[in-house]
Length: 121
Image (tube, rainbow, N blue to C red; front, top):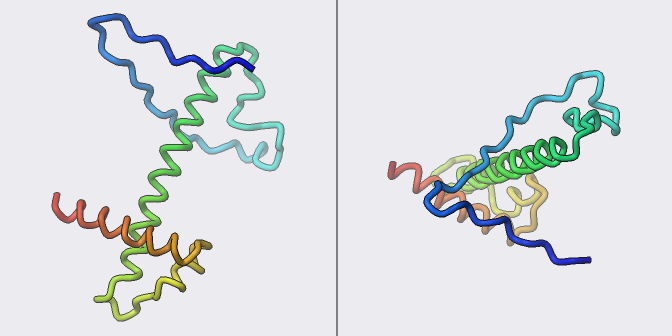
């Protein structure tokens, strides 16, 4: 299988083109349980259009997953805060989020950094 190639460079003097993630629209209710239907991609006949839309969805899902993970980290940091009377130990946070204890500690630290950055703004 040949190696993938990098995207061609934009013409000199032009601004770089950034793709904005596609909006994540809810699936119509009648297609939710149908494995054949996914954001209407199965109905696209033009492979260029299919590639464009599926790429947009991939980027949108990645952005959504990254953002959700940041909120997980902030919530974990808040739950582990020593100033809270209802503070949870790292083990309880790990169990609640289905993480290992080591990963929970890393997420708590990441969340503290995110919350610290937020408080400085």
